[in-house]
Length: 219
Image (cartoon, rainbow, N blue to C red; front, side, top):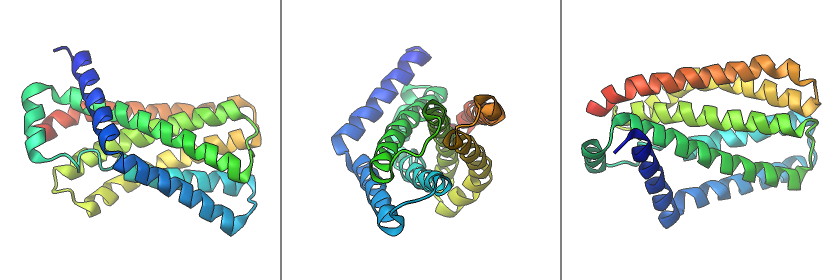
């Protein structure tokens, strides 16, 4: 099988497993809906800055629950079975793509709930959607790789938190600034640096994942 065929088959497998169980996705959707409702009951009406900050706090914890457990739920027997069938590059690429798609779905749902409950405070909607897209990609790439590393260390939750912190902080800073520019309706040229920074971070993490994961997989 070619790399493309392997990636396609693995993504299909992830979708089928998720569709059969629905446990994880339903739990995350419940978390998003409940958190938005609690925020509404607490604040009733929020300023655009608070609106933006609360949204990304919700998405960060949704990403941790959805993406960070990518490899932690894989048994050793299943990993050994994959090892005999597909390349490690196909494994990590399929995980990143699947988690990216999952984060997009969760982000769109959360944004919908947010707009229904708090109203639309976004000045530049297309730019904000770009920030959501880049944020989803950033969470998918960073948490997928960190989950792979942590899974080889006995699924150590402490290690997961320690490794996540230096990666997520610059990503969050760039995402919040980019989305804040969209909230304020600023000229899009002002946000070019943040978009390039996020793209650069994703390229670096993705390249590192492709180089490092085969060595992790052999363990």
